Length: 498
Ligand SMILES: [Zn+2]
Image (cartoon, rainbow, N blue to C red):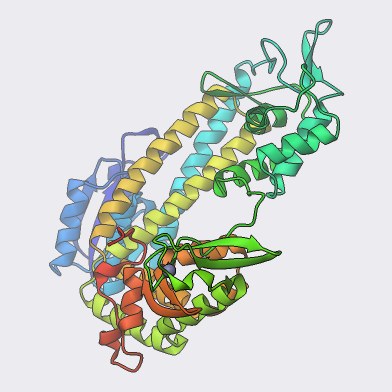
């Protein structure tokens, strides 16, 4: 093997403890000599590896790709790279065999080792932890904010004038807690809660029901779980808590994930997706004598289907049956997937590694964020520092997403996973649909169907969303390539109604 020695030291603090370039080179040459390695070139670079674009590193890569060398000797693996783009490139060259080994002071890595990506993550994590612990000390040294809340106490609390602190309002606090508990259950709207609590004795100063907007406002206040937000900054309060962070988080996720409060009245999942085949009017749905029916609205006043009431359950069966036409066996899906993957791999680049890498880093950021909040809540860092770190994370995330987008644009392999997923979803659509609760039925229909034309209590014609229409049209016994949808019919893409 022909080795390149690569020494790197950056000017930032991350490398303060590290051997100088000269010492790295000296040590590495010694290793080479002892082990009898054939060194064809020595590179020295003084530059951070946090971002791609190191000229000497790139020169080394060019040498390797043009087969003038096939192994790297460096002090530690983190000398090579600390960013996902360069990391992906090295991982790819390792996998392809252009790089046959990476030897470090401690150990040798071979093509089958998946160690590089892990080590980049590790390096980033270590550095983060190092910075954080330094900052924790700095934060502890600085005066911790007193945690007092200025101004009138929020709903559910009182100002204790004697001690100048915030105390629990024993009358209202239990209602506040109930608001959170009720809302977190996911089955009550703000209006529901106002009414339930009215029945339990909660009144405004005027003796009325609490406004639903106030319920919403209360549910959005992190003060109740101990966090004070002021002027866009976050502080830890020393006031007593009314709800736990967990309960607060659950209520928040109900509010933001399901976005709309559960309605009182029955929700018709298929409404808007059924068209009368005779007159072209939409079918509507209503409750008659305790049963749920769908029927033609007869908007033009000429339709004999008007009297044809279809029970909700029968509609579900009809919808489920249409999903038969987009069903492929698991085995066939796997075959198609592998064939397409082979094809894509031939045209593939190192981009897929970059993408995996960046996705992992994005996950790490999310973990960092929650770690930070825990640290703040444990009063180990000041809120200023917290804010600063949160902003750093935001910037880093924006940066990574940009890198991810540009990497994704050029990888054919990445569109394969969603396509496979779409086939698998389609395969299970029939069973899933019948089992799904109403809200999920709706989600499935939105994803799969344009509409169904209905006539005489039966399906006259089915129109799927484009990607799924391609599956429905595909010959179920055709060749694999006939059945694969075009790359353009990525099912995740939003389509305009024709
Ligand atoms: Zn009609």
